[in-house]
Amino acid sequence: GGCRCLGFIFGGCCSNVFALEHLVREVPKSGNLITFAQFLFITLIGLPSYVYVPARSFLPRLRARRVPLRRWAVMVGLYFLVSVLNNIALGYRISIPLHIVFRSSGLMANMACGYVVMGKRYPVKQVVAVLMVSVGVVVATLASVTQHDAEGADESLIGIALLTMGVFLAAMLGLYQETTYKKYGKHWQEGLFYNHALALPMFVRALSRSQPVSLATLPGVGAVCPDVSVPGLWVSLVANILSQLVCVSGVHRLTSMSSSLTLNVVLNLRKLVSLVLSVVLFKNTVNSGMIAGCAMVFVGTFAYSQIKPLPAHVQMGAGKSDSGSEVAVVNRRGAGKK
Image (cartoon, rainbow, N blue to C red; front, side, top):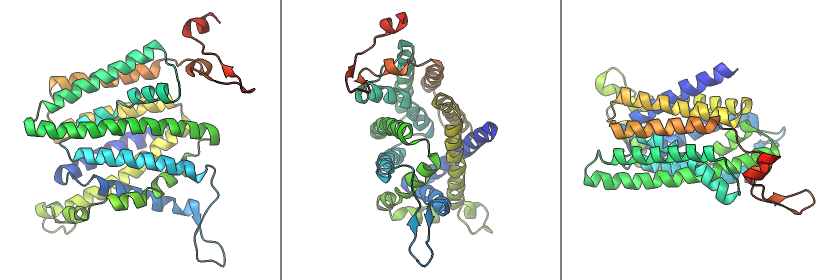
């Protein structure tokens, strides 16, 4: 039930961040290899449910889908771009705490894209909450950059630019998923399989040939315990893959059981826990500016999730009625009198 989902999310996702930080500290450019391994494993787990071999044939075939393949393909393209941008950013002196905080600013990007692309309208309180998140991200970002020297700061700014692009692409992905699930139903198991399977060829091209060698040759468990032949970084990679499966399973299960607002609160609380663990376990440097920024991000996110959204007919600035005529924009004052 719900408790199991929460256990999967907090246990799996937080463990995943722990293993990820261990890997990127030793091999900063290994992000694409880690993501590829995660996608490959999750695809193999889902193969029996969505691929079959007909009788009298040796060629595997896909089972009937509930959602058109082109829908999943668009999501995969967007998700691939987001993943690659986030992975590349980790190689530009972006700390895991800053990475977590910056990705928590997705509410701002989602609201901006929803307003511009889909013509949505939002209550003033929601806008204020999102502005709080935005200011918190700026404060935490500037505080993080000032911790480096001039050369390191320039490199961090490149990573921040990549993270910014990823946040807005992720917002577009979320809006596309929203319209897809509204039209075809919330078939999250099918989406989980195709979003990972279709992305594998893209990650193969993005992989660096030196990454597996780097993971295998860097000192790991074997350097500390000579009797252990498996390098420690490969152990961390396996732990990261398994914890990712637990994490995404919990997230997708909770999606099918609760509202998007509940899911949003849970995921941002999980990010807060991951941030605290990253600081405590890896002794990341955190100054007062980063603490203030983090607090604003998570408080603003929680406040956003607690505000009742506008009715559907008010959210959309313009639309079409069943007869095809344009529906007039309903302002907040007029809606309040009804």
